[in-house]
Image 1 (cartoon, rainbow, N blue to C red):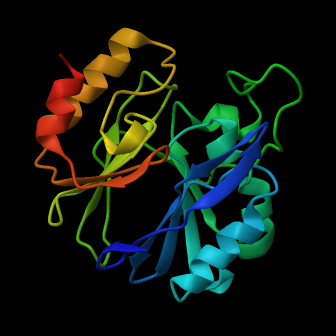
Image 2 (image 1 turned 135 degrees about the vertical axis):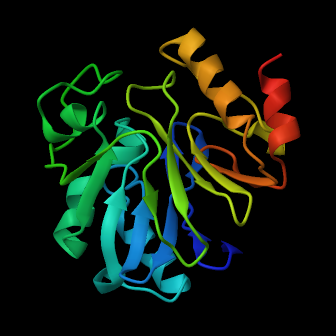
Length: 218
């Protein structure tokens, strides 16, 4: 599904116990090729490939993978993506040590997912030029260290990662934040932006933005 010109959702489905769970990575077009936003879980790469093909791309088009944070459902499939596309790997500098193996991923109690080197470590406010206009990285910690949300000001579109989720199609705060105060601060930051539509990794695309985000702070 193309949300706006040059930004596509690549939904993938996991079977967890007695229910299916849909995750929502994204593909963002740039002059250099596609930036894949999040890599999903281990074993999900074939579904990502199907999503890319449905959007008119293949692995040769993917020049970068940007991870919103280190959780296994976002970074666990990175090794498989690197094997197929050999992209530049991008993450926030506070997130990178969990991905590259210097630190153990938070929330994982058994073995970690495969460590992969991070090529570019972002900080607050860095931008990538895309077909949809500038994609600006906002540091939105709380759910996880070094969490990033991505904002397209020209399209008033937010890719929230896990800083927000959308149960039943309504924006809400993060599920299970590690730091409640930081999570609320991140929501307050996002509420200052002019947003009309949001893609949540959990919950998918909603035609909601700033007004709904402000209510998450109350």
